Amino acid sequence: MESKDTVTATFDRTSEVKALDQMKTGVKGLVDSVSSNPKPSSPVTIPTIDLEGGVFESRATRESVIAKVKHAMEKFGFFRAINHGVPLDTMEKMEAGIRGFHEQDPEVRKAFYTRGKANTNAAASWRETLSCFMAPDV
Image (cartoon, rainbow, N blue to C red):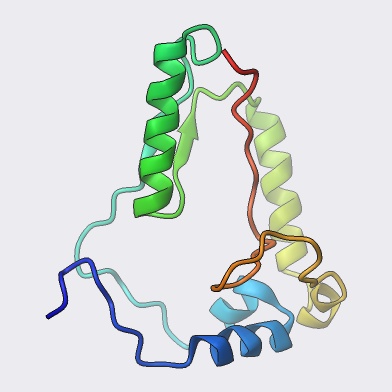
């Protein structure tokens, strides 16, 4: 009997990852290939983590933030960071650059697709991620 947190795969994951690699358009290409955007059956709350308030000055605050990041990544795979100190205009320029890249023709984007030296695991070697180091050590 499965628990509610367990999902049994009914497809060949290796074949699916290989097919994604062969498309060479990444997640954006995958999204573009779907004809409809399914709506979640219940409201989805994105975990929000506040980086203000002594995250670099206090070991207790730092450990609390690390625990929140760990929980969000294990349960959801992502989170929203607030009070991180990155200026709004910098974030807007970054978003425009990302959007501009992904709005290009898929053939143009394919030239940049690579498995490279990304983090490799059984699922896939995702390059469409942002790494964040919570330093300096306190």
